[in-house]
Every structure is written in C-alpha cells, then in structure tokens.
Image (cartoon, rainbow over all chains, first blue to last red; front, side, top):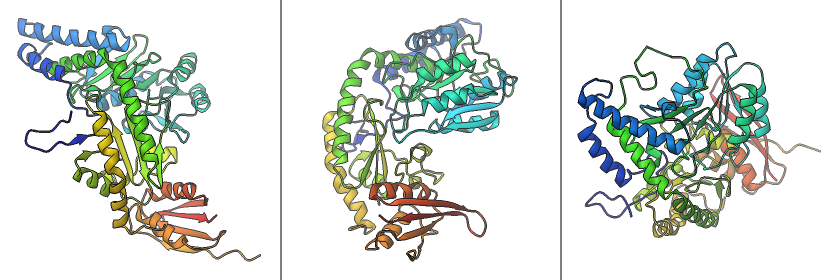
Length: 382
Length: 80
C-alpha cells in the first residue's frame, strides 16, 4: 500500500524513519480525542477531568509497553525536546557528582547538542558497523566526574543495535544514570529494559508528530531547568489528542510487532543483498544486529542530492545522510563516526505498510538511477 | 631511492562528491607509490577520501586541517 494522495500516481515512501504515516487507528483515536479531550486536562471542571482521564489512559498504555510505571511516563512536545530536557535536567541534578556527559559518537544530534551546555561532552567511538566500543564506554562511565551517560537502543540512520544492557550494568554500578534514546526502535523491536531514562518517538511508530515520550525511573533525580512551569517536561501542557493518538498507535503496532519485525527483516536482507550487487557501493551497518526495517548504503562518485532527486522522479521517496542533502551541508555525523563513505548515501526505513512488491520495484530502478547520476558527472572508468 | 613527487589536486570550492572524483581522475594511471594530496573546502571530503582509499585499496597517509589562509582540509593518499 502506498500513501498516495488522491490524484497522484502510486508513489513508494521509503523514508519513514522518525516520520512514519499515521496508523489508521491513531487517526481514529485522534478524532475521538478531539471530541472528548479538547479541554485543558489541568482544569477542574468536568470537561477538564475528561481530558485528564484520556491523558492518564495514554500514559498508562505507553507505560505498559515500555515496562515502566504510569507515574514514570511523561509526554513532551517532541522527541528532540525529550532528549534536550533529559540531558539538561539529569545533568543539573548530578552537578555535585561532576559535569561530564558520556555519549556514543552516533547519538542523535539532539543529545550531543544538549550535552555541550550541560557540561563536558565525551564521545565514545564506534566500529565500522556503528556499534559503540563497549569496553571504552564502560571505562568512560567509570571515570570520575560523570553526570550522565547516553547510549541509544539502536541507531536510526543505520539500524545497528547498541550494547545497552552491558553499558547500563556498568553505569548502574558506577552510580551514573543512563539515558537510552529508543526513538528509532520502540514499536519495531521489543522495548529495551535496561535504562534509567528512556526517550521514544511517536512519529517513528505511526503516531503523531508534535508529541514525545520520556520515561524517567523514579530513582533518577532530576532538576528543573529553565523557567518554572507546572509541567517541567512539557511547558504549557500536552496536547491530549496527540498523546492519545500516540498511545493507541503504540498499542496497535505492538499487537503485531513480531510479525512485522520478521517480515521487514527479510525484506531488508533481500534489499541489502540486491544493493550490494551494484558496483562501488558500501552497504552500511551491521547485517545481523540491526533494526528490522532500516537500511542505508553509499555509492561512490555519486551526488547524494542528485540520486535522491532521480529516485523521487521515479516515484520513490528516500532519505540521505550525505552533506549535500543536509541543510547544514555537513555529512551525517553517524556515517562520519563509522568511517564509511558519506557521499552518495541513500537511507531507507520501511513502513509496516511497505510491500515486498514495492521493495522489488525499488531495487529494479536503483541500478539505472545510480548509473545515470554517475554519468552526469562523467565518472566512467574511475 | 627518489620519492615519487606529490601530486596536488585543488578541489577547493567544489562540493561532494567532486573532490573525490577529481582525486580519482588525477590518480588514474599513476604508478603505485605515488602520493597525491587533495585540497578541499567540502566537509565530506575528510571522511570520503579515506573511505575511497579503503574501497580502492590505497593508503590514507594523513589529513591536515587548515584554518589560516584558507579553511578546509588537505588529505594525502598513497596509491597501491
């Protein structure tokens, strides 16, 4: 199934990382919550209380999937906001312990950016597959003066799973809280269990953008950062319809997660094998220890923007980690940290609605698209 | 033994993937052991030239960052 707007020819949307189409049940839940949950849940009248009940229901449902208590689950304005707030607030509470934030080199930019103002950022290198060096990360969290450690559950750009359990054990023993960014994994694989703070992204699992999820274990001390507000995690309050839709979407995707995991893993296996046949390509990330639905590859001598545009012309929407496709004109820091080719990069994330036929059509079109873009720069024979 | 002279590829002002393409074009047909240095203002080049070396079996010798008279990187490779 494609997400074609009525009137447009069938397009195949393969750029679902962080922004998947809404699950149909999410859309339905959103409309229901607009009717019942439009009021401010913090107010005392019947309408406010009704909205509050929907919000609490959403938190409870999300908590169950994450293996957390309802009181530990907070809704935020976005995944980025969750990560910013988590880094700032946990570091602030740990000021007496030190000012260092230890993070893998492939954490989301939001984590790395927030770590700077919070203290001193120490990044831990990753291997060619994008996996953090466990020993190095353990050593780093054991060093004196560490306020917070951050290690993602899995990398959203390349799919590689991180050794969260081992690192959490070491962090726990050292008294250092671990922030786990599960924004690329929740809804696609089983939620991680080894964390002190967990951030998840509804827009990644088929829920709405404009709301984020942050779970903070009761044992973790946090300090208010920035101007005072009734809800430090969501200044000004949370949209009840968005929160409710996010929770319903999560329950929906969890109900057939195992089947979707297996189906998409097989499709990506096939995709990786097909792409590897194209000359001068680097298929990036761990082939086994990865998210089921993500794939990324870099083509030598290819202009990433030109390739994305060429594929778009053919009806395929893909992402890219190449410098020329980024507003900053910097290559993906994830690809750079891995030491893989950053130019000519294509990033794919299959949605649960993406069919095998659509993947086949993409692999059929890709070699000629790459050849055409290479020809444009006259690279034959290099 | 005389060291094979350095070949300089000035790719400043060009954006990815042109610096690597210019380097590859300059390297074509040159004997093993030749050292080439590519100058680039493009931030991707400092990652992609070493990646190109790895994909082609060449040796990444050094990367130098420039911030004085011009801002960018010079990356030296030795052909296999």
